[in-house]
Amino acid sequence: MRKGLFIFGIICLISACQSNQNVSSDTTSSGTIHVSAEEIFKPVLEEQIKVFKSSYPEANILIEYKSEIECLKDFQSDSTRMIFITRGLTKQEEGAYKNKLAFTPTFGILAYDAVAILINKNAPDSLYSLNELRNILAGENSKQVVMDGSNLTGVVRFLKDSLTKEKPFGKNVMSTDGSNAVIEYIKSHPNAIGFVALNWIGDKYNVNQVEARKQVKTALLECTLCAEKGLYAQPSQSTISRGEYSMSLPIYYILKENAPGLGSGLLNFMSLERGQLIFRRSFLVPGKMSFQKRNSSMK
Image 1 (cartoon, one colour):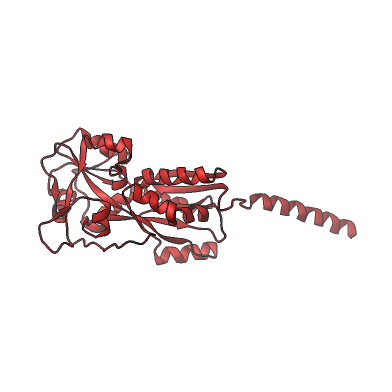
Image 2: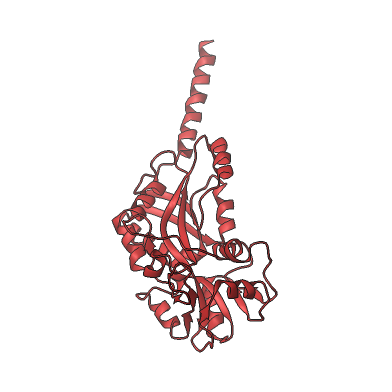
């Protein structure tokens, strides 16, 4: 009997050791975490992670850039603890994760980007109203449109939810392989328009973006909040924060950690002064620092 209890005790000890090997050993400043992020936020997130890792060299952030819908699929797996997309969780999604994990993932806005209308430097048209964009996207205008993917990226979902609503995109709308491909297409097609996140084209300190702007530019969009009618706005920090540029785009984090880990450490960094200054330096609008942002209207 004693021999049997001894053997049972040894088995339990071995099992416990094996179980402990599977427990995540990362801290807020070290270890490894898998992250998925919307491709449209790649330039600014790459800068955030570079600075974070320079301060915490033992932190290993394995980040993959893909469409928003693919990020949400990754978040359902155990390996991916953090994602960056253009929206938070719905009440239904919160409930589903709480049932699965026994706690609800946290989410919130880190900063505000914008959907920029990209046109060739020699394009004849540089002013667009929301109705004109709706008509173009619905195919009621023959102008060629190029986007960052055929799957549900953040830009595609935003345009469908905010502009076309129930209407499908027209045959004049084509997809490319990511934001950089949109920029390259517009460089050689003066009569086409493209849609990209501002952080791909609006950073005046980024050498590649400065070079690209020699061949492309951002169009002006009608200001729906301006008291004076007939005014148009470029996407910028000031027009986004004042609500003058109608197509602002939030950068959301969603994190599933019920104890402080590397995801929490990265979130804290991006939420506090250094991380928020990186957003501001990238010509985006920080979402955690004190500023005034008016909600724009998509009438």
